[in-house]
Amino acid sequence: MPRVLSLVRAWVAADTEPEYLDTVHRLAARLGVRGQRLWLFRSREHPDRYIEFTEGHDPATHRVAGPADEIERELELQLHDFARYDADPVQLGDEVPLDDGEAARGATHH
Image (cartoon, rainbow, N blue to C red; front, side):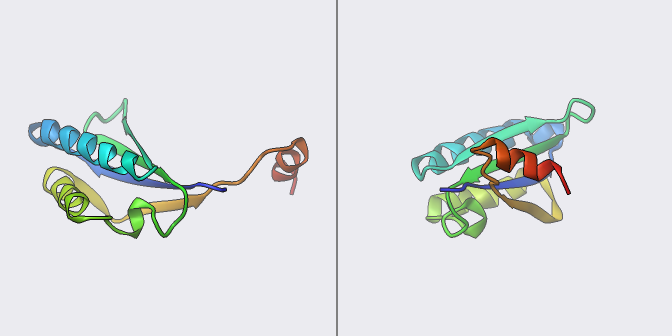
């Protein structure tokens, strides 16, 4: 089954970074129970900039579809207390299966 990946950019001030990291950690644990994975990356050039990647199995149950319960809802709201997000923060993509050599070669030729 193809996977869905979202990318979200966040700007985090130094004074709210501990709370932001704790909240992302708790959200990742909640999402993990539902079969999703959340990865967090920090920019090398700009330490106040983060990228949140979330992988799920389908758009209907993915993080971008909305929180699954009140706890996830509260964690998502808390993130906005500790970070600033783009006005249109979510970029969503569908996995492109590359299970055979022909599919990979076709993707590089136009």
